Structures are given as structure tokens and as C-alpha cells.
Image 1 (cartoon, rainbow, N blue to C red):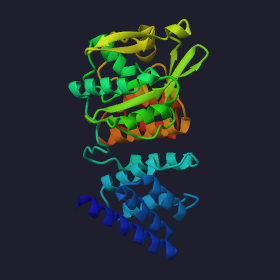
Image 2 (cartoon, one colour; image 1 turned 135 degrees about the vertical axis):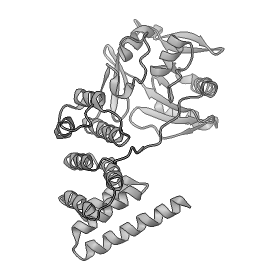
Image 3 (cartoon, one colour; image 1 turned 90 degrees about the vertical axis):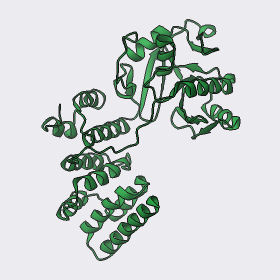
Image 4 (spheres, one colour; image 1 turned 60 degrees about the vertical axis):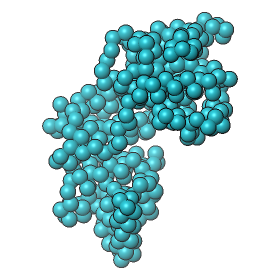
Length: 336
């Protein structure tokens, strides 16, 4: 019932936007579209509609003024801009920055969670998912990587705070997807830019990363980022070692210590709250636009939740460089 009501409210905003646009009231139309974005479950579609109404995107600022004049709560405006930001295409980097800067004016007065946090892995369910995953993908020689490898080798178990299982393969990611689908134990999304995302029947989230060899570098990643490791084997016959865990033997990088040092630096010392997606020393952007977009959204989400952003802002500048957005943030009390 709630989703149906949300859909009706979004439809009303689209209707008003069309009426305003048809009568030449473009600023009002853009304002209604911004509100529709906050209600629509497909923000990329919503942004496309906004750009149809305002192809040169000059009315985004005017639309913000329209919303302010209506005395709407900051949260409504912020949510609208946050979702609008999500849908901005790579062809409009200036629009993305403009929306991010506008959102800073409307940070909610009370903490707001803008996304559903993924729960940590249940150990028993995670162990079952890992065993099933590696059995199904056995023809592709799957091996433990990232947080999954770190947990097994340092703690002797999956990390308690980890939210998914990370597995690496060389070869064919499409083939991995087919094997998982046909097993009946996994729901699989189509492979996208080097990573295959799946969910085990226990609800455990899984990332399968395709690994690429370029000289002495082995890298894996997504459309946004990549992690580059030193080649961890001396010859093709010795790419992997193995480890016994949970009554089963798993493949791991031959020099797994070198692998973990590349990913975490001092991997032997626990680092609570470490986020490999922004903090890993071997991390770099795969797409500068998508990385900047991701980092801006992370900052906006932290601001909305009332969380400090000083550390996050440092990683932003390291990975994407300083820009008008970081300059605006450094002059605000949110920089803590």
C-alpha cells in the first residue's frame, strides 16, 4: 500500500510538471520534477525526464529556488537532489557538480539514513554460501580474495563485520554467471564491468571478480574502481596455494601475504571501519567520473546521517582531486 501511494504521489508530480512545461512555466516544471525524483524508484529515468524538460540544465538552480519558496522541509529537497545526482549521466559532469553543491544548502536538520545498510554476514550462512559457491565454480578455479581472504587467513573465520563474500577468477565471467544460475542456489545479476554480483539462497551477498594480468600487475575491479596487486606467483603452474577452512580446501593466491599487503598495508593489525572501496592503498579509479560521483554521494549520505566527513573528504581528494565541492565542504562546520 505504501509503495502504491508513493507511486501515485510521483505520478502527480509528473502531471504537474507537464502542465507547467506546456504553459511555459519552466522553472515550476523543473521544481515539480525535482520533487518527483525524490518519490520515483527509478532516478535515472527521472533525470532523463528532467533533461527533456530542461535540455541545457540551466533551470536546476531556479528549480531549487522554486522549492525553497514553497517552504518545503530541507529533507524533502535534499532527498530530491540526492536522487537526482544518482541519475546524472557521464555526459553531464557540470550538472552533477551543480546538484551536489546545491544539496549542501539543504542538509537535513535531523539525521536521516538515505540508504538501506547491508547487514554483516551470518557466519554459518556465510560458510555455507562460500562452500556452495566454490563447488559450483570449481571448473573456473575460484580463489579467496579481499576481505574473505583476510578473515580466513588472519582470524580463521569470515570477518564479523564483512557484508559479502569476495571471490576471484581468471577467465570467463559470463561462464561463472551461467554456472551459478544453473545451480539453482544463487540469484545472479548479469556481469558488469568485471564483477558478477550474486545472492546465495541463505541471503548472503557475493562478489565474483574477474582478474586481469598486465605484466607484473594483476588487477580486478568494477565500473567505478580497480585494485591492482603485484603478481603473486613465479610461474603459471604455481598461481595458487590452498587453505583448509570449515572442513573444505580453498584456493588462495600463492603469495597470499603479498596480496594482503597490497590490499591493506599492515594486514595483520585489525582496522575497525576500514573501507576497501575508498581506503585500500592499491585502489584507483576505473572511471574518474563514476568515482567522483560515488564519492560525492558518500559525502552527502554522511552529512545527512550527521556523521563526520573529515576522513572521507581526505580520500575524496586523494582519489578524485580537489574541486568546487571539496572547497565548499572545507568551509563548513561539517568538516570535522
